[in-house]
Image (cartoon, rainbow, N blue to C red; front, side, top):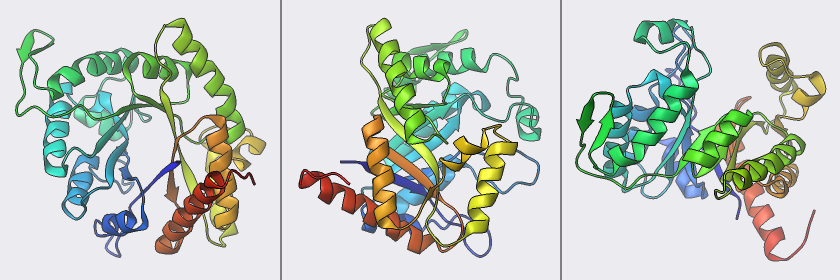
Length: 301
């Protein structure tokens, strides 16, 4: 069955609405997701680990997903102890999405002394060490060997990024590959390459978890604004950018989920833009239910 996740809305005072994690759980969502997105230029942002810890306190079974954690921003030992702690707080509900980070050179990166170069090597080294650290095994980090306790189960590790390097990293170090801002057609092409890489390295093919944005209300201005960012900031061709946002009612969204499924994805995480978050959260849950009903009856849209 297609798994779905989304991010939390913000309150009137601008903070994350932790209580809505419980609402997502009641709607049947598989995970609540939080991005590690701190730029330091005044853009609103929150510490992903603290937000997910808050969500853990008001829920019982929904997954707590980093979507994604920028590993070069954080000392590896610190990441490991936070994941251990969150696993114990939540009853082992963490999904650890990680990446090399998308804003090197930003004020926050400079302020914390994060590396501007060699982020891939940093991420690979962290991924090699994290499982042992989380399991409480003696692990070498630089010149130090450390053991963290109490041990915790290593969560599923998803590797973010659309590049071939990210796919290779997912095959070598991850349980899943987590591309974002990608159409079903583009995903299908990359999924073929992912399988080829896995075959070349004689490794299992990772699962695929797609991240994106949805605007499931009547808000053409929000759709136009989002696609403009894809073109101007992410340098996407306009026709490709137009295919990225998920829009429409539950039936149309179910068709998009089906398209992602046929392209190889088993999880879709969508941030809900454009207002009326609760209505959109309900629409996405209904779309997943429609897709599940169609599959159980052996039909296709």
